Image 1 (cartoon, rainbow, N blue to C red):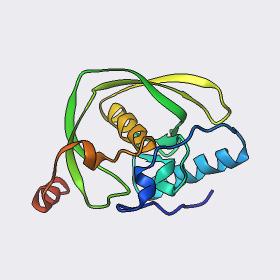
Image 2: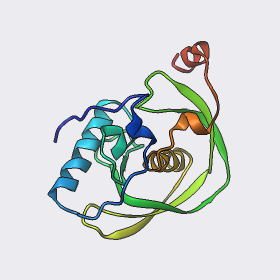
Image 3: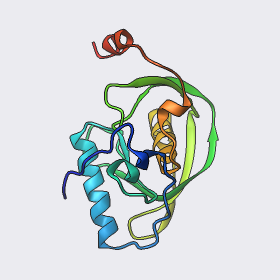
Length: 161
């Protein structure tokens, strides 16, 4: 595994739509492993392939404190959602920036694993938010485009106290 560079605000790769993964091979496995390591190193809860410069439909998410519960989603699609939540949201590609974003409170995703096997997974609250945020990246949408408003510097400082 290796740490990858996280693409930052202003890089055009963040605005591009990703292509589906077609080969479920060692190269994909390495990408997913590297993305998980990069996400954990940056203290993130999710990371999408375009955030490391790869325009493929792959995402890793880990909302738990243990680093052995990474959820890998290849070619994911939201197939159901309900409810609503509003809260602070940030992004590893936009360090130090936070906004208020409305998301569904429940989300169901259909995806493939690293071997191409299909599965579904459901999440509420933070996991539902992470699903939406990371899948938006696969379509070239960043959280700043869907937020109600960006937080001020003093609001961010209050949040981190």
